[in-house]
Image 1 (cartoon, helix red, strand yellow):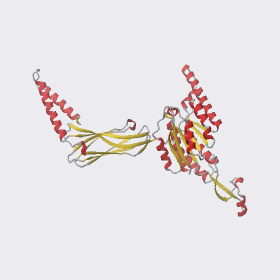
Image 2: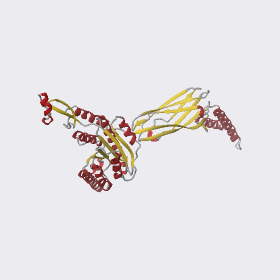
Image 3: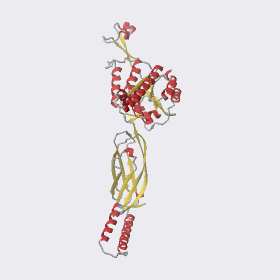
Image 4: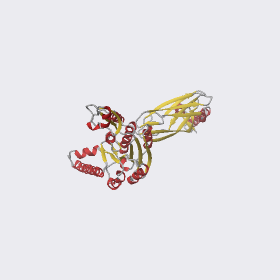
Length: 439
């Protein structure tokens, strides 16, 4: 495909202006001059593009990291090789999605015969998911720059944009605290002790009297105590709701984003402490299942299983998800259900289904509260609009608290936290369950 350049349009404009300064009869002399000169310009443009290398002689390659975190900056580089023996002026336009927010997606290179040129730009994704970057538009200009050969080229690469891990620092704090408990020191909250036998050692004044091992003390002739550590190789299963409730925005992002952050934090903390964690994502049907594992790569595997999820605008099938989990994983585990409590479907679907998993597992339900609704419920009403809004907010908060109380009455633990606090509070509850030996 042959396309004109801006230089050709400028030359044609200058020709028209120049002709206008020469007097000519109105009966067609001026028009004839313009047509003749423009025909000459077009002939020169065609000769110019004929002298340009063919686009098929130009090789374009794109390189970028395979995985980028949401909101993080990454570098994209191109390498362009001129396979022809003639000099080439190459312009390339890449087909980035708008949500990748590329700083620049067009560049222009001058390459001698056989030379390789490079160009770079940065991207900062604003949406997570799987992005297939394929098409580039390639233009090879003639020596005079009046016209160019254009070709669409497929240069396929795949970019995975993973959810942002907002709670990374909170996760490191929990890991350090758990490790302090693991070596027998007293934490700031004074929780722990563990249930898995570690070793025998001599009694100190700070030890609990009930930890004394009388048989070992009799053999040694001095008081000996047993020390314990939190159990390892316990199982945690995250059940991530991908239904319509998780599409509502709280704190500026969908609830699903907060749930993903909590799931990643649980994965980091549990795997670093020697436990196993798995994942089930569901809405109307089970979307993905990741068996529990305790190696460090499990965090990446969980992220890869979640990163391209988009909430399905339909009610979630809790019974099907619970039944699938019970059929696949029978070992007693901590089941962490990440959902929301703001719909009547909780009473109609979740509450009747919850006893299925409460019989054999410890159930922890995590949800994100909307701080705006809480503020409206507590705020003062100064006009009719405020009165109606406050009444609706109070009703919504009361109904949400009632559903949470119903879940607790069935035997589940409920963490209903504002944005930014769900992941840390879930991790704290996981550590409490772990140290208490309930698993």
